[in-house]
Image (cartoon, rainbow, N blue to C red; front, side, top):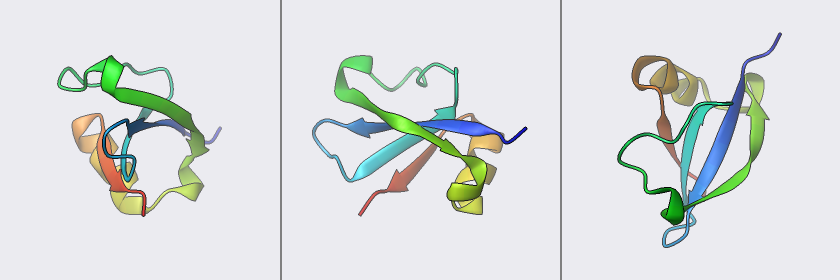
Length: 65
């Protein structure tokens, strides 16, 4: 089964995406009031660098522009 990842966008900076594994909570530093759920993506739709960063840190930032 393909790994899935949730994307959240920052309200003040919508060009910043924060990815976590589907079902994982936002990281401690991410105030839930500042992030909007933007959908779920399969691993094959994300750059390998994002997948590797999530594997290492539990989350990854991505420039959405």
